[in-house]
Length: 107
Image (cartoon, rainbow, N blue to C red; front, top):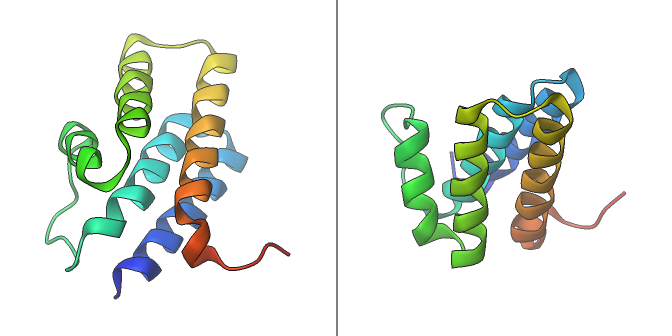
């Protein structure tokens, strides 16, 4: 599957998990959507969160990579429900912005 299809698919999954209230999963899937942009071939195994976040530095601007690294640290510390929701929401915004050239026009 081409990288852009994987990226869009991960973003769609992230949005679905966000709607279900699974904010940590939505956060990681948003990161994975951005990460997928630099994956020429489909990965043979699911990347661990730490590896995924480290590789975001190749896929995104430093500011974005820092946001995801710090956000993941907060998830590991156990954020409040509201903070988890805000982190996931911000992650989705970043992913949508970065993927906007391949997402097409909004409906």
